[in-house]
Length: 103
Image (cartoon, rainbow, N blue to C red; front, side, top):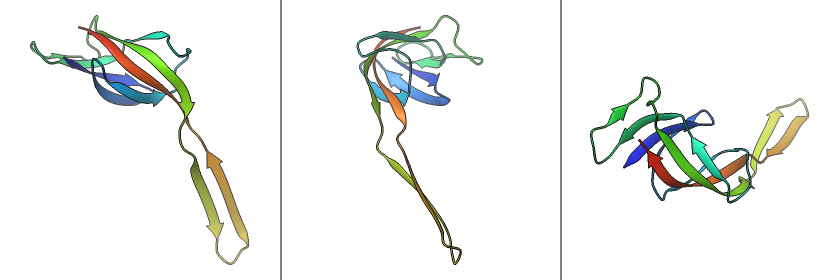
């Protein structure tokens, strides 16, 4: 069984046992999280398509860790003007392990 969930403005296709990195969610490592924005549930039985969400469907996940992604460098330059700017950014994310899909 698999589901399509929406979190952090993005959509993810997940199955039980999968691990994925999503935009930062509140909570510490080891905390259970219930994701309620389920757009689609498919797999063994007939698929359930939401309009926009599937009624009563949830995905349970466990927070594995809170971390920061690799640094992204932003470099700006205007030629012949002496203008140069270099900025770094590290996006925070949450790593989840999907434990159960409730359709």
